[in-house]
Amino acid sequence: MLAELVTAQGIRRLEVFIGVLGVLSRAKDAKVLTSTRCLPDPSGFMSTGINEALAHINANLTQPFEEPDMADIAGLSVSTFSRSFRRHTGLVLVKYVNRLRINLACQLPMGPEQLKITDVCFSSGFNNTSNFSRQFLAQKGMMPSRFRELLMENQGAAEAA
Image 1 (cartoon, rainbow, N blue to C red):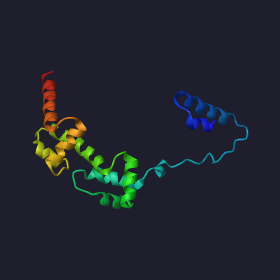
Image 2: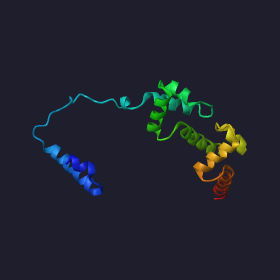
Image 3: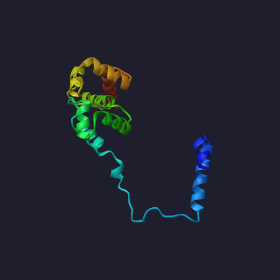
Image 4: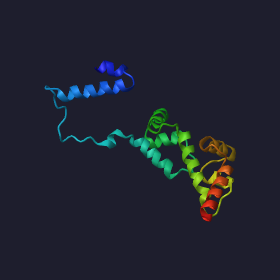
């Protein structure tokens, strides 16, 4: 059944898996492999070093930092940090940070002072406007100025209602 489970596709795979569970539940010579007092600590499954690096990123999002700095915080080599970070977040460090910074940028113009796009760029941690605009377009599907226009239209419609 296990061999078939590996190669099965679609609904058949679920059928085989349920079959395996059925066989296991009816087993007469089952052996307990752990005591009932054993409660696994889920924090042991989490990458503490990566979590420390993520906390540092969130606390210092607008500040510049490099992968070696994050690796030091995580207590890992740069290559191990890079692999672990990608496995943990699904993104490389630069893309992860850029996504957070673009999300921050989307919140900044919403304030009462209505910052200029250049100010939003620098306030969200980017160090040049062309990279900021390119990243914004890639993530939001529009330029920052268009985002601002739509935001103001929505705010105007909300105030009129």
